[in-house]
Amino acid sequence: MLRLLSIRNFAVIESVDAEFGAGFTVLTGETGAGKSILLDALSLLLGDRFEARQLRPGAERAEIAAEFDLDDAPRARAMLFEHDMGDADSLLLRRVLDAQGRSRAWINGSPATLTQLQAVGECLIDVHGQHAHQSLGQPQTQRALLDAFGGFSTLSEEVALAWRAWRNAIEAHESTARDASAREAERDTLAARHAELAKLAASSEEWNALSSAQTRLAHAASLLEAAAQGESELSEGDASLASRLNSLARRLRQSVEHDSALGPIVSLVDDARIGIDEAARSLRHYRERLELDPGELARVEARLAAIHDVARKYRVRPEALPQLADETARDLAAIEAGGDVARLTEAAAKAGARYDELSRALSAKRKFAAAELGHRVTAMMANLAMAGGRVEISLPPLNDPTSFGREGVQFETATHPKQPLGPISRIASGGELSRLGLAIQVVLSEVGTVPTLVFDEVDAGIGGGVAAAVGELLQRLGRRRQVLCVTHLPQVAACADTHVRVSKRTRKGAIGTELEQLEDAPRVDEIARMLGGHAVTAKTRANAEELLAQSSRSARAKIRRKA
Image (tube, rainbow, N blue to C red; front, side, top):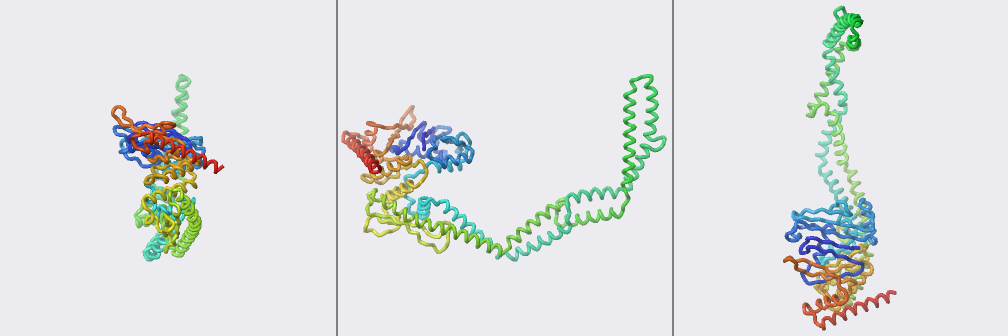
């Protein structure tokens, strides 16, 4: 339930903080005072697109925030918990918009996207706009209303997804059959490449090892010569480094007796002798392992040449051949799978069966829901000065399956007993269409789970006893849900549990909007103004008092009958 709405610098509103309670609340005021702007701001907070022109003139940014009580919104609470945005009993939404058309949003202090705002908004508020009835004659609107009433909108979406999957499977099958020759040529090319690469079986590790081996074997003679010469100079003969260092070490040890400072130097010379001996031994072992093997060199060079030839053929570096082999195998598998007409035939059949299963389930649910919705709207029409009228929802079968099912949805009405049924758009007049739209919206609201319902001048085009009936309907809804309604009708305003007046004010040359909750005499005056215009007389005030009294008596009588 909406508890608080805070608006800064939006349209004509400079600063407004509005608190809301349970039950049925009306917002009234003169045209242009900003009643619908409050609801526009609320819609922005719930994910609508922002336009820079909505910013208050002269302001750099607008800010909208709202607090909701989640006791009656388990879906919203579950969504917040799932996205780690808190699991408290209340929810705070905030959105900031600037003159450049940019916006930022937060949910319980955490940054949020417009998609997240829309998702949580769908769990909190259902907005019925003042022109909602104008689309009532459109088939897609009627279909959406029926699916929403029955509670199977999700199933309808699944049917649409299944239909697209079925169509895609059919198109894939037809495309494969049509392009069979081209696919076969491509498959042969890939298969030949795959066979050649598999036979070569080159790996990046082998390429590195062959390159090293080829270099070593090609220079084996010079390597042996260098190793032999190095060993000789290090350790063989009186002129070798080892012999000369031994002589030096002996002389230095003898001199240590005369100066102990030479001791560390002797240690360094000894370390050098040990290092030279180790190097000489390592060279000897190296010569023993290194062989002159022309046959091995020829084998290595032949293998390298084979790898080079294949790499040159496919225009890749030799070390990239393993990657090319993997890609070729994947492409070949994909084209073989894609070109498998039998497999695609089976896939299309399975997709068609899935669509058939879901669409038939949807048809059965629609049949039951259509009868129930028609019955409920017909009963509601009697309360809206359309007694004897009726609404029936037909489901004409379609020649071909569609993304929305196997049947159309057509709302038909008769506005009086002797009139035959016909499409809503042709049978109902403008005022009747408005009343039918409101009746459908009320019926849908009765079966919904969203805790807050907002009606923005949906009572336009009606008056008198019908207006009183509309007020009673909204009052009845207010006993189960929080209802906010912008209205110009005094009969509707008199039925409200809470009455808020929206008015213009001028301060320092700037026009702004302010809200005031009305009770007792101020409420009587406001309803009198709505009855008689600007000139509030004793007569219009008396009429307003009587209207409020009638509404109060009617409400008490309904409560007693219910008890």
